[in-house]
Length: 190
Image (cartoon, rainbow, N blue to C red):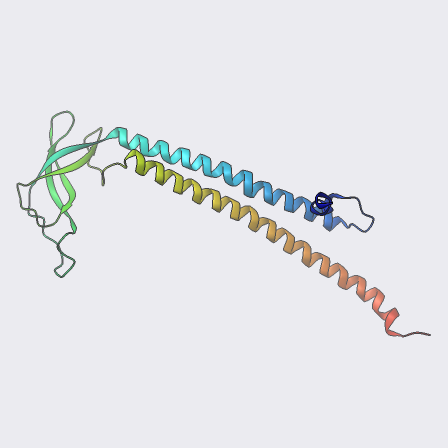
C-alpha cells in the first residue's frame, strides 16, 4: 500500500495528463542528479583536492633564510604586535645559489635574524608551508562536502524550476478550459 502511494506518478491512470508524466520524470531526474551527481562531485572534488595538497607537500621544502632588513609593522596600535610583514630575505636554492626575495615574517625581528621560509623544487619562495596530512584530509573533505551540496542543490533547484514551469503551464491550460466551460454554467439552470 505504501509503495503504491510513493509511486503514484508511475501508475496508469485515464486522468493522467502529459504534464503529469513530464513532472514524474523531472522529479526522478532531479533526485538522481542531487544524490548520485552530488556524491560523484563530492568524491571527485575531495580526491582532486587531496592530490593537489599531497603534491604541494612533496614539492615544498623548508629552508633557513636571513632577514636583510628589520621586520617593522606598517601600523601601530594594539594589534600591531604579532603581524606578518613582507621583508627581504636571502637563502640558498636547491642548487646552492644564493637567492634574494621578499617573504612574510613575524614583525619585530631585526636584520640578520634567521627565519624559516618555504620554497618549491626550483628555489622559488611560496607563500605558506604546505598543509599536513591531517589538515589535507580535513580540507579535502570540506571541499568535497561543499561540491556535493552545491551539485545536489543545483539538481534540486533545476527540478523545482521545472515543476514551477509545469504548474504555470497547467494553470494556463485550466484557465483556457474554464473559459470554455464557464459561459455554460453562468446561464444558470433551465
